[in-house]
Length: 79
Image (cartoon, rainbow, N blue to C red; front, side):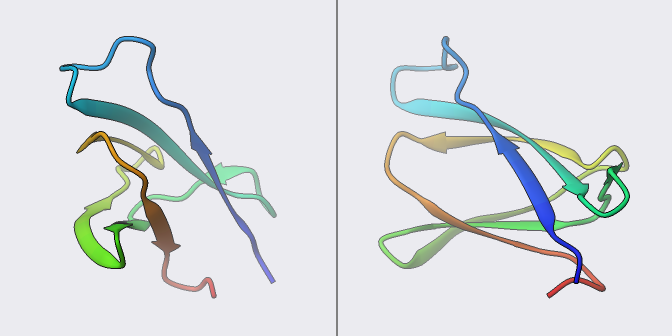
């Protein structure tokens, strides 16, 4: 079984007082290689608020309204 590793951090200076920017990097921990095309789904109050895909380097930057979120990461070949 392979694991996905997501690195999240909130920047010290958000774009506006109402938003946060989250740079994300997803790697296959078995190979330590970036996972291109992984799907990132963010949820607020159990409602999907956005879906993004990682680029060829396994990275994506997401800007969201400030709040508490849960997230799901999916990728072909992983479960």
